[in-house]
Every structure is written in structure tokens, then in C-alpha cells.
Image 1 (tube, rainbow, N blue to C red):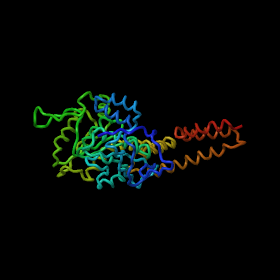
Image 2 (image 1 turned 120 degrees about the horizontal axis):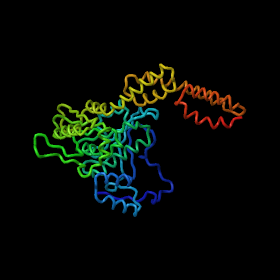
Image 3 (image 1 turned 180 degrees about the horizontal axis):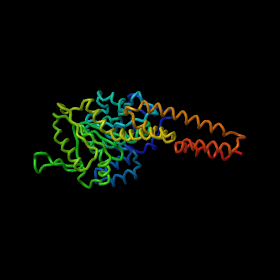
Image 4 (image 1 turned 30 degrees about the horizontal axis):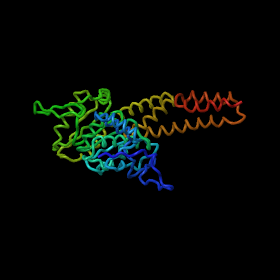
Amino acid sequence: MLLLTPNAAAEQPDADPEPDPHAITPHRTGTFTLTQRGVPVDLYLETRASYRRPDTAQLRTRYRREGINWITAEGRPAEWHVHVPDAYTPDTPHGILVYINSGNHGRIPREYTPLLTQFRLIAIGANHSGNKTSTVMRHSWAVQAARLISDHYNTHPNRVYVFGNSGGGRVTSQVMIMDCDEFNGAIPMIGTNAYLNVPVPDDPGKHWTGFWTDRPDRKRVAHARQNTRIAFLNGSNDFNQPQTKAICEAYRKDRFRHAVYLEQPGLGHRPASAEYFAKALTHLDRPVLEQANELHQQASRSDQRKRPGDALIAYRQAVAEGFAADWIDDATARLQELEARYTADLNAVESLIQPGAKRLEVNRELIRFFRAWGDAAKPDVDRLRPLIRDLD
């Protein structure tokens, strides 16, 4: 049941309201609950449109007329379970791991918790969103969750992942295609659907019906084929194993570049072990780490050629993306050295900008600074130029 919540601005707050104990604090670590009034109405309608719900246009007109800004499920606010590793700091970009559970809580399986630190991930999952909840709401909450974490934390733009188990895995497999511009990777676990019809092995004439056979968005499918990293994760003893394996094979034939099938021996219909979930995460991260390795090599070459500005730029990117690389400690140390040199050179120029200073002399030092650091210095050079123009 969906209930409509009027525009929040129309409500009258208390004269001295207490702080919301569940409101998100930027960069907060630990485990906590996050709430919002509901799903923003535009996001809800976009999701309905993706599912080709025929009444979407009429609902849009009605909601605008009535001033509806939020959609809730059974009158409850939207609520998520959040886990941010204690090792997170605003200086260390983390990925986002959105969980769609088949049950009614959003806490990831406990054995996965140590992986959040290892893989630098922030986990978030909607509560009260089990298999009895509408697919449109579960899908909307997943997108909303990723956006909320991105708004309040330093996150890696190419490491936004979604995963789910059983019925949650099936919703995950739909989210990863319909919102492939929001999520870079997905782990549908012990349950998955395909956007296209997939033949049932050894049963001629039968197929599993696709969820997007009615006018699929070709642009989104094409984007997912090229960019979305998918680890279909199942167990050898799970009754969904034949379907999951067949869908992965169908996607690979359909030119999905980054789709793999992982199977845990002896696993029935339950979440995979931490070992196999880590294998799935490793697959999702592989292109990111490959890019980080290239950036590290580029930084090393620039360093050897005495081009500190180019090295600084490349090291910054490599360290941000190469969290699991074997070179990360050495690269971080070198980055800190270059940052210290850059800051010292910048401070030397800034110290010259004071009343009575000669504009030509200060400008000469600014040019030397720019020649030494190149593009890495451009933002600071652009900032200092107007200050130097005001000198005598």
C-alpha cells in the first residue's frame, strides 16, 4: 500500500524542535539508522516509468496538482541501516554498497562487515523492504540510498554497487540495468532476473520471462553492456542455480563485457560466504584497480622525468583509486612528499603578496611556480592572479 505525504514545507514544525536522532551527519562513522520522509516523488515516478507502469503520467499530473513531494510505504518514513567503517575519513574516498534484502532489515550479513574496511565500502540497506514490499519502492529506496551516501561522504564515483539476496537479488538485477547510470556494479545473489527472455536449459520451448521485454530502453542496455560490472553469485545446491547460470551465459552472449558467474560449492539458498562475496567484490573493483595501476605507472614515469606537477596529479588519482594495490603505501608516501613541496612553493609565492610588494617581481615568482608545477598549479595560479594585479 502506498500512502501520499503532502509537501513537507506545508507542515508546521514545533517552536523548539528536538534534533532528529536519525538525521545523517556528514562523515559520521559506525552503525546507525537514517530516515527520510519518504521517496522523493520525482524519483518514484521515474522508477515507475522505467517499469512501464501505464498510470505514471496521470500520477505525475495529480501529484503536482495536490502538492505531493514524498511517497511512503504504509505510512512509514523511509529508513535505512548504515554501516560506515571506523577507518573512513573525509580524505579516503570509499565506495558505496547498497543492500536489497529479501527480509525486512537492511543490515548486511554480519560475516561481510570486515569486508567493508578491506574494500573501503560504506554499506546501506533499506529497512521494512522485504519481498512483500512493492518492487518500485525497493528499487527507489536503493537509488535514494546511493544518492544520500554520495551527498554526505567522500565517495568514489566509479565504485557505486548494489547487491541483494534471493528476492532482493532479483530486484538488484533489475536496478543494475534500469539505473546503470547510478550503479557501476552489482552482485545478484541466489536470485536474478534478466531483462530479456532466457531459454530454460534442457526444456525446449520454455523460457524465463524478461522483466523489460516491453519496450526496453536500448540506450541503458547498451550502457550496461559496456560499463556495468556484474558478478552473478550462487550456490551449487541452490534451486535458483540453473536460472542464474543461464542468465549469465545469456548476458555474455548479449555482449555484456563485465559479467561473470561465481558458484560456491555446497551452498544452498542462503547468502554466500564472506570468501565468495569478496571474490565478487574483487571482480567489481578490477577495472578500477587496473586504471589505478596505469595511473601509478604514469606517476612514476613523470617522477623519473622530473615533472613534479604531472606526477602530483597522477599520484593523487592513483592513491584515490588504488586502495588495494600492493604499491599503495609507497605511492601514498611519495604523494605526501610532493604535496609538502607544492605547499611550500605555494606559500612562498603567497607570502610575497602584501602591501608595498612590486607586482612585476611577484608575478615573476608566480610564473616560476607555474613552470615548476604545470597543470597541478593552475587552480592556485588562477586564484592568485587577481590579487597580484592589485599590487603596485
